Image (tube, rainbow, N blue to C red; front, side, top):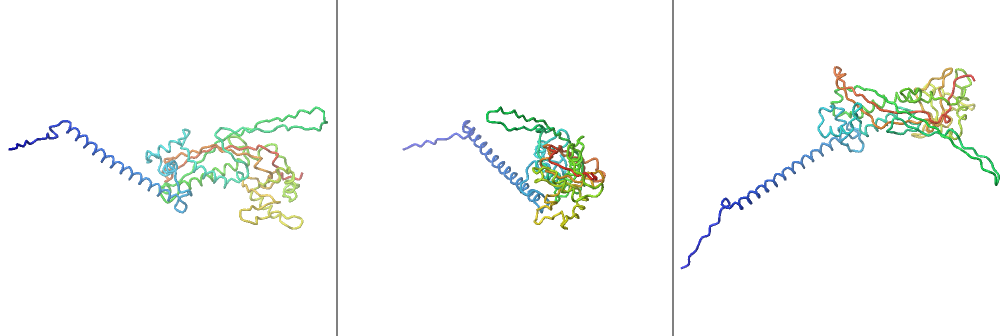
Length: 382
């Protein structure tokens, strides 16, 4: 007769190693489930952020209250828009970090590059001289340009004669960068309306404000805390009108051909609206108007074959005045924009009127660099 023995296994709780192994497995399983759940939540959050960004992108497209044609809105620009609408106090941490990157310790926050580009584009549209002169950018407080003050001399020599020495001398022109500031008031309701592109509204207003001041300075600025203007620059040759008060057609021809050919062939006329109205009525001896309208789209109208720049800051026709300038402005005048423009949001000063005040400041410099490329008409008999 066989005998069977029954083996009994120790329960996990009776085996410390088995109990520890089971506990580790349970912890590992729990951690895996936790990580999976966390990853799903992060994925959902990322998807939500993407949907919000896409929604804001669509809102910023033309026709949807926005002005961004690329369809992409950078974090810095979203932060700046939030700053304009609501101020820094209600921004989330990510937007605040993006805004602090452009923090200007001198007051306000630096506007993102896209916003500055929009403002400068508007300034070009409103400031006529900017359309004709050479414009650059700088990160310094002034720009120093070399200027040729003495030209080399040449002479005919024989085969074995000593060649004379020729020297060129150079000087310098320093164009200081001045500060221009302004403020605009925007209604609180306008800022609260999501359908309104706040950036576009503010950039348009700033462009008009800055362009008006700049245009006046580029024409008549005295160089004190502002650019030196064309009309205030010494050394520009003059041409007499031939009459003490009445603008003469022959004077325009004389003015044009008083300029050397190297500058004349690329020249433009600069005058205000009142003077332009007089010029458009002038005829030559054959009865043809001196003014010729553009025959094609985007082709400028011309006076004696050269385009006209209309600048409201130029003086009217009057005795002793200089109402018209002709020359190659791209060679004669330089404008330099200082990189960076700051905006300060002030919700308190005009709060009782339901307005939010925005202070903006930018820096720009300008000065004549080659006066020999210009001629100005003086209203006088001789």
